[in-house]
Length: 168
Image (cartoon, rainbow, N blue to C red; front, side, top):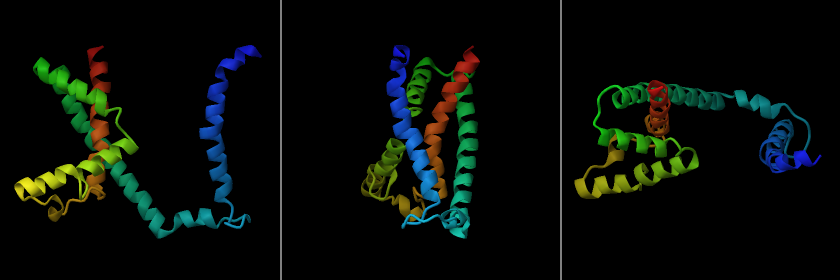
């Protein structure tokens, strides 16, 4: 029994943050706000608005994964086989190591803080150069904006994965 004590923190973590929320969501999906059983919540997942959101998500996923793979492949090839100077190679690998661990909420916040309507880069472009990024039709929350944001994480990850594979 004492042998299992070492994994107790993992079990508690898994129950609190994986199992309990999953059970709560599954049970809640079949309940009304009053607590009665219903299939209406599940049926609501197939409304045109929700299906459209699924389709947009699939398109962003496809575009960012294909774009990230192509650009990441080219960059990894340049680093490993292309004869890039060592100081550039070192910079690319350092950036890739940092950026590949920068995903989720911090990545979303960073892009909003830099390229959002009141973001640092957006404001600097407008104030220093008179260039309004959003007047061009750019929107960080559009298909293009979301694809760029996801690729910021995917390209460095592709570089790290391929570099390790090609070096072996």
